[in-house]
Image (cartoon, rainbow, N blue to C red; front, side):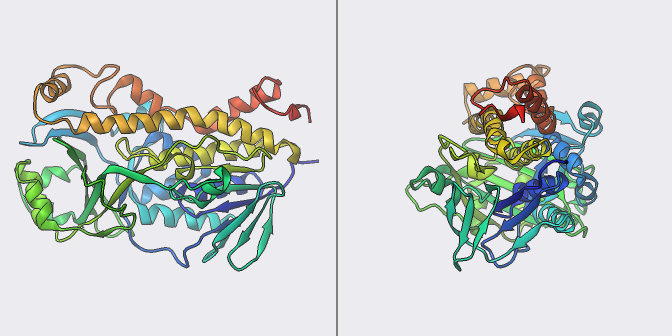
Length: 438
């Protein structure tokens, strides 16, 4: 007799949820995804896919497709906000593949989602659009939709983002995202504008991730594709905003003139980029409290991705950590011997994933303080360390920090889950129900 075939229900159809669906289908399980939106919008911006995320995509069999739609930046360059002078450079190509055997990529979020969506559908995942989950029965388990339809399952996963209703249902109280004190602005325009100007060409040839560290704010800019058309230049600005104003969760048109005035003392080349950009969108960066639990005591429901650990974007790890969740769950369900073991698998998953995700969340928040130091002695000492020292443990460029980089990029979520399963099968996993003997 082979492994049991489970019915999994996933609430939310984001990048992490799709990766989980693909992984569960690869493990031989049936999957239905419920997405409240009637259709996916062709809007978005660039995101970074670091090696720990690329490892997951490789295991899922979609890395080549993502790579074909992505840009491999040659380096990450940190710059002074005032004059653009280089403070630190980390070579990405070929170093990342030489060290981790997978690339560091920039990809348009729409293309990334589209690739995973196509792979999920090809694998047999059923995706129900305009389907809002209004109730969850954690004991059966089952979900009920707004149209009163009910779906039963062996396991339910809440992957419905930072404003997760499934998280609030699990916790039993309102747990909405709260204002972080920052907002993000994104600007995108054709990269050929930079190629036509001698003073800007080196920002795109070769493609490089450039970051400007400034007082209270920082900027990240890189090249990406969209729908395999002419490449684009994407700028992301993170800066303070009034915490007394309501949270603005949906992107809205930004005031370009106000942004240009705000940046009047910044690197002339960065200000030239703002002159080229015709428009920008902005929204509030939010945070969520760390939920006291990810899984229901019945052992048939778990949170994942931003629903479990939404974080600030200052390490570019948000999507990557959600992909790691998907990898861990997929690997564990690949080993399932009996449906009675599902509660133990979710216990393993939560204990395996919580410490790492919360530490990345903490480091992301701390990175804001490193990026946004105001002019003065602390800023000068940060810049001196970047300029005069080889990377060390605690180096102000976290991607070049030899200890931090290995911890972030060297992580293999599939391997970690495999090792956890072996511990469980020896009867040594804490707080499990002893069903390893099955």
